Length: 460
Image (cartoon, rainbow, N blue to C red; front, side, top):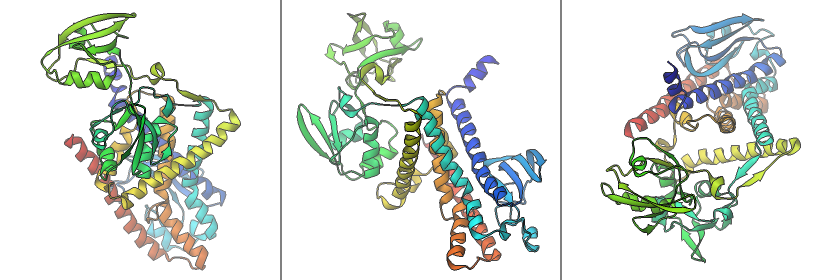
């Protein structure tokens, strides 16, 4: 029982738990935004649900709740269909498609009786709350943890490159100077700068000389779809962090904190050098020279056919480089929270636009469903990472709900803006038909995105 629980709490289980908790929290807060403005303008809210109590988007199918409680005229509950959530606002055409209510004369407490600007705030409520939540989380994270990153100039050993980067002409040990002629301050922004800006070149220092390397067409596509490497990473020494039991590494006598400096007599102080030599020795003898307690030690063994010796290298950048640390006082944290939120919002909009504007980004390779969301969470729980990812998902939810698709908040906003500008209200019949079309479209997109996730699982 105890071991089963530990197994669940590690790896995939931990990813699932983080996704469920983060997404559920954001859904409840999003729906609370609608609820808050509805109550503010004295509009009756009949239901407030986490998940759907019907087979979305078919409001009349499989209607039941896992939990429900009525308080002050509102039914609060948890539905059985674990996707999204909703508030049912009296007198509103929504996913519940309550045509009987809409056939009755409008009542003062109903959505349709409110002024257009009030209805606009009710519909924007969820989006507003998602943005505010992201801001508050970022304020808390920067206020508590501050910010830490590796400055590009502090990556003293240069970069390690995968096959895509090598095909461009980048080499292990190159030191990045700029991307597209623009300096990059943070090492972890190099790749995102190449992708989001679709840069045409990257400038590096090699053997003391500045080298300008063109970024050929297809590179962004390879970076986005690549599964074997990370394009570029900070080049680091090979220091053993953990040796797995029963492996070739253990049989050789490799120990934690051993630093590998040579393989079969060839100098290999960096991981890319060690890995390249080791991969050519499948099934063959191998001799490692390691530094242990400031003394060289020679270890011998055989490389398994799978080319895996069985140790985990230490990837803690603080061990090798001087990281930049920034602490924020409460006032500074507030400012950083706001600017970072809108910076992330802008980055996501650019990513989304690339699906339609970039030749290198294809929808069937970039879109994903619930499995893709789950994969972004780490296998081991880290509060700072969890909060940062939850804030980013909140930004995604805000943006996606703002899309002008009937059935989403953005669809209603378009109709309301039309009414505010022209003074003419869109008929309920048109709203019903548009909402039906929108819900079918959303269902199609949902099935497509999650289908892509499932296909990728079987493909890999």
